[in-house]
Amino acid sequence: MIRKVLLAVLGTVLGAGLFVAGSAGAQPAIAPAPAPAAVPQSREQVALSFAPVVRQTAPAVVNIFTRRVVRERAVSPLIDDPFFRRFFGDALPQGPRERERVQNSLGSGVIVSPDGLIVTNDHVIKGADEIQVVLNDRREFDARLVAADPRTDLAILRIDPGSERLPTLPFADSDALEVGDLVLAIGNPFGVGQTVTMGIVSAVARTGTGISDYNFFIQTDAAINPGNSGGALVTVDGRLAGINTAIFSRSGGSIGIGFAIPASMVRTVVAAATTGGRLVRPWLGIAGQPVTSDIAQSLGLPRPAGVLVNGVDPGSPAERAGLRRGDIVTAVQGRSVDDPDALRYRFATLPIGSQAALSVTREGRTREVALAVAAPPEDPPRETTPIQGRNPFAGAQVANLSPALLEEVRLPTLTARQGVVVLDVAQASPAARIGLRPGDVVLRLNGRDVRRVRDLVDALRQPPAQAWQVQVRRGDQTLNTNIPAG
Image (tube, rainbow, N blue to C red; front, side, top):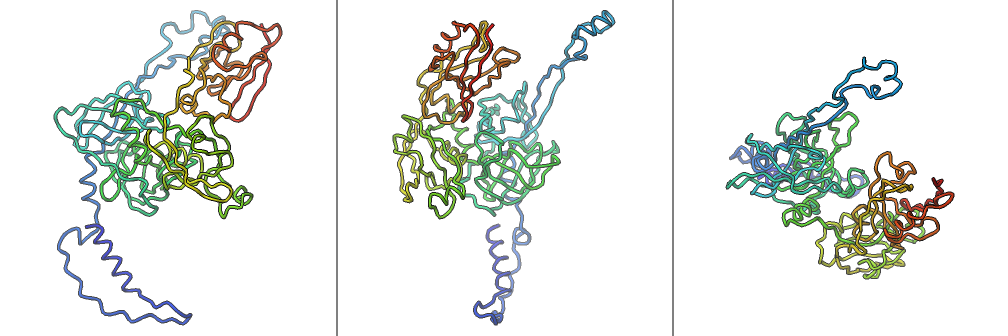
């Protein structure tokens, strides 16, 4: 009905302003007299309204309230200072020096399964001790966390509605969205209660936002405010286009720049949670960079587009498909990609075990490459090991590199896949004091190659006389440092 009303209005506007194109002196054409307007037969014909869509979709959007107990110091940290103790002694407060404070937060969520499965943002429920879901009809349920994926900022909750079948939102094809499409944002901004706002799709495939590891978002000007996180971005035919996640704002309120995680990514995370399996993302095995205008000009390309491959992981699906350095990947499954974030997103939403079609430009010629979508292997096994003892690595947790671990911690593709990766560093530990960081890859220690965890452990058992010689890869840099022994 909304489409019919829009077409009728558009036809009236165009009919009233018809001109004949031609020479500079073209004159308005004489339009035929319009037919008498029909008397509106329904409320929808009188006024354009999204009320039918809202009635259909709003019951599937819920409010989420979380409760978290935070422990904080009850008195000044100066009490522990020996200088103050020396002068004030027993006059300083005694007893417990910590107190508990309840921290509440709110957000929104979307029911995607009638038996009580709800999707929301990971940042809405992160660290929560209690999660409560309030339905559109104000019924309250305790929720449990089924799965959380911080890399996409998505989380899956479950409530128990008994034998009742809850209203749900079906997934839209988010890849079919176009700039200018009308969308509705439904959520609980500032905790005022369920609210609906309307806008358009301002951009699709928005990357480079820095919001999450998978930077690929629908941008909208529908008003989104704190509390909308985890709520629904809905198409005018009542389908879930995305999960509202973040806004760009200088004041904390909406200025018309909001971002939503596309439904294609949401569907992937929900599917992994409902099958009870761990979310495993496909392994592509390349490193790349955007094709800038300078690169396009140097390669003789008509315009800057695609991802320039500058590294291929040995044994990866990309290598087996014949990709090599210097290739330019311009599309995945017919969907264009303009930077590494877009390429990673397009590949991450493909089902493992399927075949992907990549459009690749090589030496000025574009061809289609068939690539097997496979899970990254954990070869060698990670052998997660905490380092202890009197050595500069004490307090670090390390593991063997593998394609699976590379993807998990989002390290760049390494053409020579060897070394030991630092997973965690304890505060105030020797490892922290020498500047080790999670994601660092230890390559050499005291002149010995470190290919596996056992190599590092063996080298640490033999302290040098003067200094530890350490070589670490951090990002695309190789760092060499000497640490005094003893």
